[in-house]
Amino acid sequence: MSMMRRILFLFLAMAPVLPAAGRAADVRVELKNDDAMAVSVPLGLDQGVTKESDFTAIPADNVPVLLYPFELFGNLFWSQPLAPEDFSRIAPGSPVRPVTLSKEDHAAARKAGQARKADLAARQAEAKREAARKEAEALRERKERLEARRDDLSDRIAAAEKLLADEEGRADWVTSSEERDIDRALQNIQEHADRRDELQEQRNALSGQRPYPSSEIGRITAEIKRLNDRIASERDTIRTARDRKRSARSSYLSRRQEWQRLVAERDQATNEIRSLDRKIRALTER
Image 1 (tube, rainbow, N blue to C red):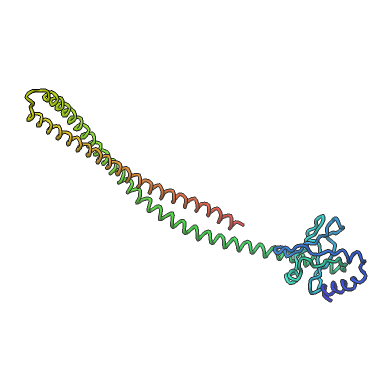
Image 2 (spheres, rainbow, N blue to C red):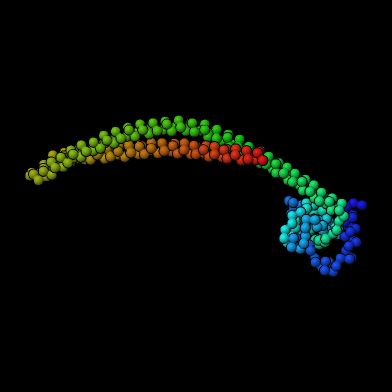
């Protein structure tokens, strides 16, 4: 007779003679742990349960499932890992009853429970290793993409550095050239302004003479207008030169920002690659 058949026989034989209080205790399965393939029962050390106690849970099909305390606490115990078919039949609320096993069946139950625990641990460990292998492989693929991006960024940085150096040289040349133009224009403005001031003084002096020297005053006025036009032209030269300086500076800064952006992206990719290396090592060393 198989152990389960003997358990069923013992359960059916003992059920009629169990004390009324025992039948009314209504102890039932509380929780199921899918990872451990175990169930919890609200009986523990406080109720006199030991790891040598044996119980049966009664699923809906009334075919009992042997339980014994695998993890024992004050007010509950977790059962040994159960066979998948037995675990699937038990549900929270399944009644739990004490049972007395022969010495052989008691020992066989513990041996089977330990074997299932070892098998479950081995399968879970293998599942973890497989999950780690897959994660490491995914990380390696991501690392390869990042390395390709880093190499591409390095090439772009080299090109950007050349453009930046060219732009810096052009900006320096433009700045130097435009500053010379500005200095020359400022000098011309000062000379034209000084001459204009002299002419204005002459015109003021002539305006009080009689007869009124309209021809000479007209000539001076025309010369003052020409000087004002030259001053305006020189100021336009200064504005244009300053605009060119700003444009050259702006182009240089734009090139530098692009170079800095590429360097920052490459540094970020490099840091991510290092982080992935650490994660891959941690996964492969498990």
